[in-house]
Image (cartoon, rainbow, N blue to C red; front, side, top):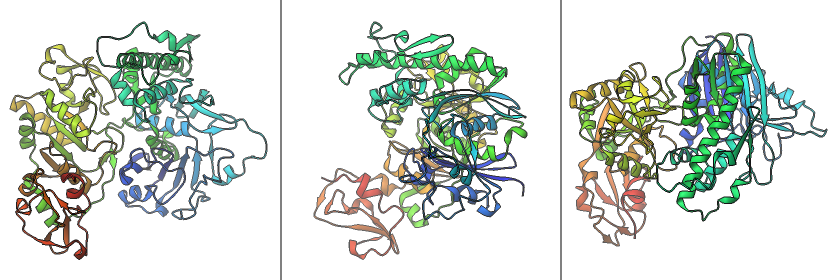
Length: 627
């Protein structure tokens, strides 16, 4: 076996990755395993999904050549008290092992995007809210012993990276320029960078974290009543000698009582100011890097309007926007760093994101028989027909996407020809009805229906539906007629490709709607049992594909009458042996037993000896509403 590198990111969006001889083999976010969206770990614990990626590659920790870690909170004077680098119980490897190196945040970001790009040289722009904190503001690559030996007894003035400009070539990694965060007692109000502008406004409008995508969608709404006299881009930023200068006096014009149209105006101007400020750094890096190639990394580049603006500027011959520019991608950057990817760059860019391993979870056949009706093997033609007829289908196929956007492996798919279908998908996801739903389109058909970049495998660029297809594809168009296309070719997912390719035979364009397979506030589903649960409690989804099998709900489940009420009965249901299904945890049962066409028997709750896979989920939590 050749060189094996384990990459670990500790921080929010905690993740792990494996690179073998320069090839990315496996990567997974903690959130997919823990089922907690944006899950993070500040220190090494057994919850960090190290074993998931090792098992996926049939490796043990002893097979690993390099262990490269990036730790968000790690800084001089930051190891100890509340945040030791590793939990006392962590024994998967010794942190003092010579294989272990700790690298800085932006350095890992940069190597991630470059490593995936297939470029032999490139400029790399990294932008996020905050990265590593160091005494000198520079990158680092240290062993744990070297880190511990750093002087901490003297006074230090730490610097926290915010924007970094790199050039990466065969010769190595050059940091060309860097900007830093500005400490402030009101960080949720004070603006000092593009990321802080976008983060603070999104928190203000939506009242919580991680609403950047919603702000981007809101900025594209076309409604009358924009208050153009309220604020302009010049109120937010000045451009001085090519550098954006952020202003802070405009925020007093907005408060929690601001009317809707004022917030729409704020969203629109924020997006414009954000893009214009970032373009200053794009122009800067083109000038100082002298490279015709461009790579982007950092959470800032989840903004598809920004990515498209960079591409449209034509300042570079080639641009690469990775699937996971946010912090989850750092583990892949760590793994590429340990493999010194710049010395042997990939010959082709990575254009798929199916890297997250899915363990084979065994489900009792009697459980499946009770809950699901097996409609036989997955037929591409049958799926195409059902989609053309308006069916909504959950798709659980093979390993999962690593990044934040569903690309077909963990997706809910439907036709774009019916606007009500888009509304149905937003109801399933419990999202605002103005939120757009993105399409998957055959790469070779993209130019027939859309204007925009020819290649967009990660759904991170803007396309516009051609005017003559607005009426045919009403569910695709955001109010500004934009769409976030995923282009699909036969190498990405042959089964999904075949389905789209068959759609025209049913008088349907080779395009489908696609949203991630998860509920509100949840990460994308990784495991089969969670996909089945999600399908069963969302009756607006008609069918589910599980790898090569195709299911609908069993008639027993489909015919439940949720309006029938029977009081003072405590019952549970078993279908076979000790596999029980709980109907209720209290004494109010809202359904007649006969409705179930019971094949098992009614027993008392205290007789339980084994829990079924679905016992805690179905009837007492979701399907039956208690008084």
